[in-house]
Image 1 (spheres, one colour):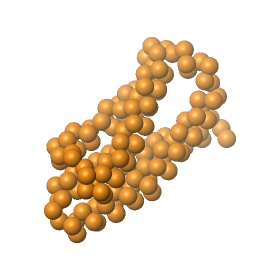
Image 2: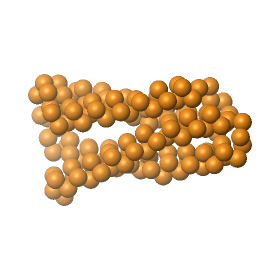
Image 3: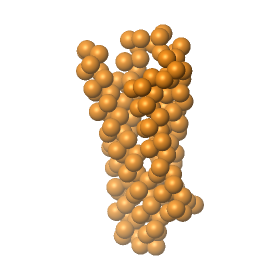
Length: 144
């Protein structure tokens, strides 16, 4: 597979993953705000599960796979650059955010989530910061 096709597939998977991550905590906001309405929370729980398992997980796996294939073509050069090290740190944070989102989903389903809707709204901003960091490092490549 050509490098350009790998890049395209990596970007498509990454956009899909971020779309899911941007939306998941928005659903959690609604879930927390409607905690007393069982019909609404039951519907939100289904939406959250489908989003997390059906979109976020497969997109994360595809992004990782295509990213690893891209990296394998020139890994030795990337590891020496400052921009790639920053990107890797942001990627680790992104994986942490992904798995934390899954934990919150399980806590909401179990009725043990302690987050407020305001906290969910703030947490919802994290992927934006990570996206800006990751894309800036990959495209601009400062500290090459």
